[in-house]
Length: 456
Ligand SMILES: Nc1ncnc2c1ncn2[C@@H]1O[C@H](COP(=O)(O)OP(=O)(O)OP(=O)(O)O)[C@@H](O)[C@H]1O
Ligand SMILES: [Mg+2]
Image 1 (tube, rainbow, N blue to C red):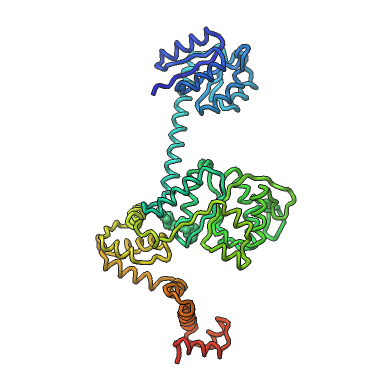
Image 2: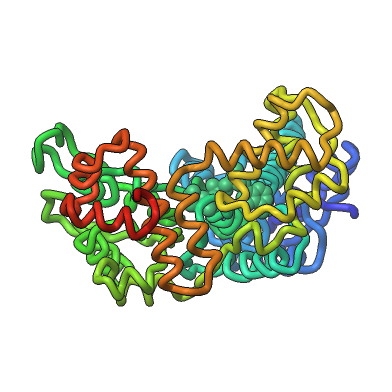
């Protein structure tokens, strides 16, 4: 595709001579005697750069035309003027002009300026494409199962809008990755997404973290501090673990959602922001509402576009692709590559993966470090999965078994048995200490242990 240099000047002599020297340098040119004609050419031709006179006779002047050109296409514009003064030059550069050259024109200067503006524009474009590609790569959701395809489709639909999104799903399912994917496909992809891990911040500090504080508003507030909402102004704020914030902070967040304004901790000034919030949680917020821990109004506002990230066990078809992807990541970290047999994959698909993709990644890392063979078969997988069950968190063990039974009473019995067994073990079999630890009367615990068959 041939791109032209467009010369907009009301003096035909300038148009002809500029066109002549640029064509001698191997460029192709188009000319227009006024801004209106120039804008028309911009609509219909492939223009790579514009040389624009400021004083254009009776019609629209160059400084007015500049933003209109930039609006249509982000291409370099070189302004020229015979009435040049510092003020117009500054105005031109503020308006987005790449360069400003005074008349009478030095042709050498024009050629140099054209060459460097085109090079700059090319580099800028390359840079943008690279950034976009990097963002896409970073936030790639691997998996061609129907469930994963539907998830990607939801992300693609919601990302370009300015809707607030609530991402739900168990630990390690990829909620963080979904937030990154939304960001990378959104209008704010060029600026960083501000992240807040609500669960990691002590309750008394969360408000200051989100909204900032003024100096001296509490012990430790030694200077004014900007909050995350401020930092994210005009872009995206990702509130991870939103189910873990207090009702008071929820009320403040709701106000931002409704009015786009807030006050710093200890401050009286109202700050206006324009922020898009993505929130994630592994809690069942509907249940939290019922229990009075989460505001229903905030939930409904946040939940405009709910995205649920499914468990790995619901999309085991994705395992081979995920393994390839995660192995590549481990290889980049310097770990040895492994080849898994079909039977090995079949074994992995049978497992429940309570820690989801994160557990899969940790499992592969363990395999890469501890398994001496290059090829991994079903037996090795079984052995390693057995190992991972042993080191699995005790809570996970006790919550899973009851889930396998349909009967509520039986599930409760199983839970109680596993729980008390565990607590007894932690207290070296001492019933009095265990009773104190779990908040039961000693005699009651004694009876319970008997009825559950733990003691005789
Ligand atoms: N579909 C996927 N494709 C590739 N990698 C994934 C996918 N889903 C999750 N991962 C990887 O699994 C790990 C866990 O994902 P992530 O941290 O996003 O989970 P999460 O749901 O936010 O977990 P938590 O609830 O603990 O915060 C990350 O390393 C992530 O890159
Ligand atoms: Mg997360």
